[in-house]
Amino acid sequence: MGGAAIEWQSGDLSAAFKLAAGNGRPLFLYWGAGWCPPCNRVKADIFSRSDFAQRMRNLLPFWLDGDAPGAQALAAQYRLRSYPTLVLFSPEGREITRLPCELDGEQFIAALDIALAAQHTAAASLQAALNGSRALDEAEWSLLSLYSWDTDEGNLSSAAEQPAVLARLAAACPPGDACAKAAARLHLHAQVAAAGRIATGGPAGNASASAAQAAAAIAAAADRLLAVFGDPHLARANMDILVNSGVNLIKWSGARQAELVSALGQAARGFAADPSLSAGDRLMAVRLQMRMVRIGAPADGMVDLVKQTVEQVLEAEADPYARHTLVNTAVSALNDAGLPQQAEALLQSELVSSHSPYYFMLSLASAARRRGDTAGTLRWYEQAWAAAEGSATRLQWGTTYLTSVLDLTPQDLPRIEAAAAELAQEIAGNPDAYQQRNRTQLQRLASKLALLTVPGPHASALQRTLTSNL
Image 1 (cartoon, rainbow, N blue to C red):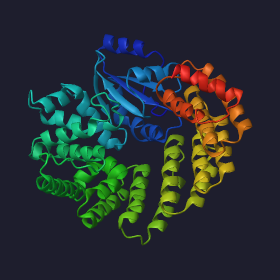
Image 2: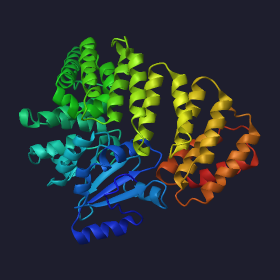
Image 3: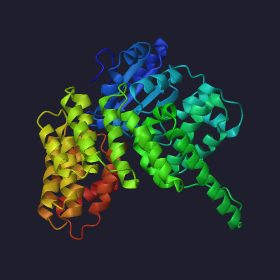
Image 4: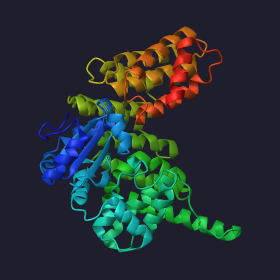
């Protein structure tokens, strides 16, 4: 794993918590998988940093691999699902906060320092902010704004409640320069969580008041976006949100879209030219520029820019972790630029040298499916399953293959039977089969098997097994 200077613990998490408590050291938990591109980005851009390694010397860093024995059950216990999830615990084992993995290295170190200095957990700060029991200081607002809401998993709020919780939190953030940066980020989180829905708060039965409040809310949201997009410091501080959700934020804004496109485009060009950012983050910024063409940004020269940037960043990168995530981003950028053949060629060329070629095989299956090549789709899914490593990964890849067969060729009973028989054996040999990420995949498969009109004996047996265990 990346970051050779870090003495990662693995294996028995409960023993690690006891060791952390005995030594009075916070525990830093990394939940991930070898094939996961964002995990490989974290390894290359954050874990490899000397300032990160220096901080880990005073902590107990624990690596929970999703394929380790019992890992999926532990993930369910600690509410971990998305790869990667990064959690900081106090020496006593209380969860302090979850850190966003999408931050660039410099911003991540700053967020980690805030978490290490925190006098209250994120949960305690959130409760105080919402119930008004005490005033939060600037550091607490920063802790909440830098919380990884994407990987919360109901830890601070349920998925259904999160849009309202974030909207209340953003509204409660005090005005003024001291908390301006936290307030801007919290408002972005609230808008992303709401997926464009603007809560008017208008009185029931008063349509004109509600309409007026909705218009005011939309205008205020657009103003806040322009303030972030147009401020180089705020834009950089929130680059992770803008790169991942900026296009949707503009689509959802409902107002001043031409101004928003222009402002975000300028911010993206600044990211792409920033030498302090990693090659992967600069490529993400170029991809953002390409995606913005669909919502009105100028298209001139963008396809050539994507091709040139992809070529440059891949030519310069040999580290397997960094290259894995770079290839994944490059493929997405090439597809966004209308260059699917080049994207597939890149995937094919990486299969021999990649440490996780089975991940790229899934991408090749998706490419074949987009162009209507059913045989190619299933061939790549089957090869990905055959090449996959790790108990959870193999179960999830096998489930993906069988689900695709059921979707695309439900009449191919011999193929369904063969896959069902093999997958049943893997499930039987996996104590974690019905836990967390594995469980989600098997639930999806069970619903597909239930649609078979005349299932064969192996498919029927698998369906009964899943029904009795899910």
